[in-house]
Image (cartoon, rainbow over all chains, first blue to last red; front, top):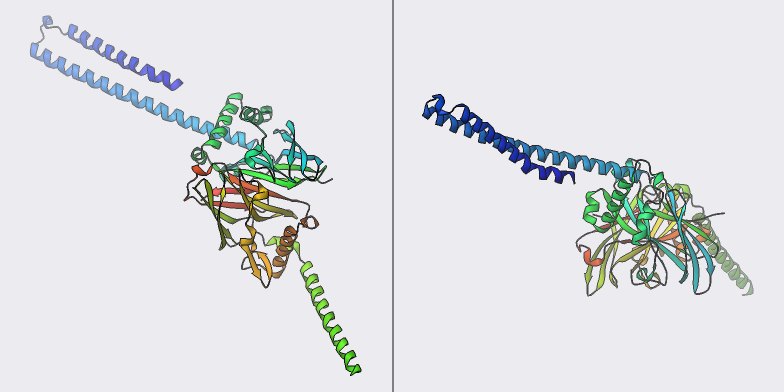
Length: 262
Length: 204
């Protein structure tokens, strides 16, 4: 937005320079008018020289203005990129704690189907939402979208991101499964407890959210921004009544599922 | 003649006893696996599968190539399946902090896992009648490592992995792009993280 303002000021600046130049030029003409007995030829030659000099000055000033503007744009872009990388590093770094993404409890089990309660967790380990489903089959599948960041980020304490996607079973295909988080909930999920994310204000979180959305939908952009891979990962286990399974996000190498032992 | 019958009976008994002893010896030797020593031979990460995908007649054509621990191509599996996204399912067992990965099934977004295609038979190597998962073979593997992997593999196939480890699960990994957005010349590597238990798909 700011760069647009500068862009609209440029013609005004150029016009101002032209008017100033004319002013200086005519002042000169008046000052050395022929009535003041200056040789006419010298007078014409001098004025032409002055006019040329003024035009050259205008050209130089215009050239300098354009280049200053271009430099300004480059510097602004560089600063924005640095800020973006810093912001993303902060965002990703703050997710670096190995944490529980979801817990799955088998609440009922029959010969042909089972009931499962899925709880999704926020960054701080609080329950974001809990859902219950009845699925045919003997095994549950919980799918996550995983963003594996480049080792450059990982080395600096960053972590991968995992977003719950679909719940299905051994007899229900992925396409017929249940969506765990829809588009409208995604931002809330990612930013549910942003007070725990040090160094990020609401604007940064918006930017991070938009970044994540773009990364998921645009692999070329993702690669250019240091995302090593974006994959789906459906963890699964046979259903046992009363058993509690937890999905963990690892600091490198994706996610895994552990059966809770008592 | 009668005294010879006794002799033959004793001889037969000795032969049977010998067989039983041999089987017991094999069983004892195989079960005396040094797990820590075997796990020490595992690499931090390895790539058991590389994949190429293409689309024809609304089917996903997939080419899977299997690799051993030294990145030698040991087997291939080519097939097709209905759908838009291919899922490659791994069986993962966690033993003493290390994870073992066994790719065993493929299915799609519209084909449920129960109707998937088994792929593990492609990379099984026959060692004197024993089927060994070739993705864990390497030049520097010893008998201890081989027996350890064999025991885990047998337990998985017989559905008795519970006796070996309580920490096991499946992980079906897939690309997020539909098949029509995937370059048929791209090669995707499945990187398995032995320490962490995760799997990544990285485009080469």
